[in-house]
Image (cartoon, rainbow, N blue to C red; front, side, top):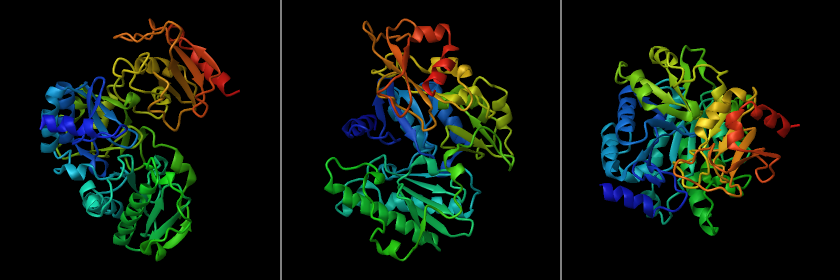
Length: 441
């Protein structure tokens, strides 16, 4: 099994997103990604993840911006053990082919058995059986790119900012909506089966059309979608502009940590990384089937009955309990020494700078020119570039490195307005406030 897992990952094209059956090798070991079913992970499953992170990976559980969960730094010797444990905990599909079907990301704000939950369950099952690589091969089509994804949302459409290829939602009137990429219009359906069938047919249309391009596009929005896609299932549907009842502000504003109206609570993790030992302390006394849902804002949703949020809030170093926490204003890539292309360490520096970042600003630190993990809310970027005498060392100490940070806007990475050394920032972090201010005047 170990050799098979490693072989799968190395055979995959560059840029393929890792999964549980198809891990990805990085500088610091294997990345094993779990896609939670309906955004839900039980306390028992979180306990498994925490124990695996503590024993076989880096002692952190990473939350991605698509609502995935991943272990990083898994050694090749432990890869098979981790895979077996995830299968036994039902954190992975039992079938490798299903694990390569397009991801279905679900809003965490649903009640078990409600129409949104039922839509997510049906869509997930249908995608795994009709859009998996094996199913597409039977139609003479190649597997869909791993970046191709679907989203299930409710009427408030808070998941719209994820930029999914296909988005389905349940409206306040009980009808179902389908949006294709960012084409600006959608389709309405009375029955859930019709909405799901239409989504599958739109995905098949993309799988067919992308073959005419070299290189083949990986996202639906890369194709010029006709104003009226000529598919029988869509021709019979009601067409509308954007989405009925869509509140524009809710599309772009993330749900921040804090207490929600229904008594549930959102808890964030600094830089989207959960300390595995802290997570273990949270879940070890919870009922095994208690749910902790994963959000697409690198946070967790605890229900109103759970005391875990109170336990987590008691350890502020590991959790973000309030919306005004300065650590929400920073993000960072993996950085050195975990990435071979990184010039400096950035995660510790990001947290060090967080209190100096002005409110309503967001600072992203990138350890190299690729600017990985740049979030849509970023208003300023510190981009590490090699100085005249720069070289990457094993420790890649940001103070010792000769690299410098370029200060730039997210939409103008190639046009920095200033530069500063990591050493200068470490010695006087308050300088970042002026640099961000100067960037936007």
